[in-house]
Image 1 (cartoon, one colour):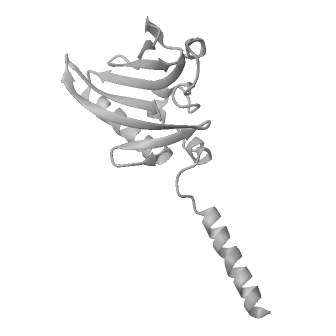
Image 2 (image 1 turned 90 degrees about the vertical axis):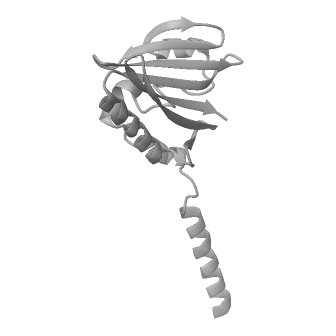
Image 3 (image 1 turned 60 degrees about the vertical axis):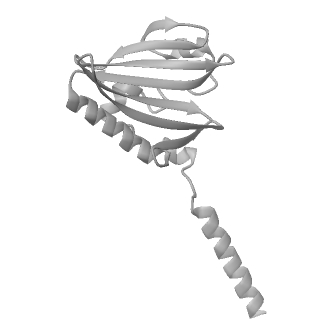
Length: 170
């Protein structure tokens, strides 16, 4: 009888350990990551994937949710621009597949090299905390949709320093 009890006890303990040790970040833990103040004017909020937009939304929903100035509209993309400060701006592109958001791209530009570097580093730190990190990108999950995020710093072009961030549905 004591052997059976010990076996049951250790089996239960093992199951509890497996259940409580997450192998990857869950959506709940992703939502708990605070958006750094330095990124609030870019992200606007911490909701959905980016700026309140999520994968699978239709073009009309993006148009009503996005507060930046619409630059260009086509059947496969909406392009916006937003001034961050006197020296920095961002272009935001929402790409559509079958009429639904499938990719989001942020292109950030600044005349100030340190602003660009600091903003880029803040985005990398934020993604490191919020998403599952792989070698040079991150994996995320939101509302039953898996996606990947990657970034790249750009060299100085036309008097501007920049980088881009891409969120792409898997």
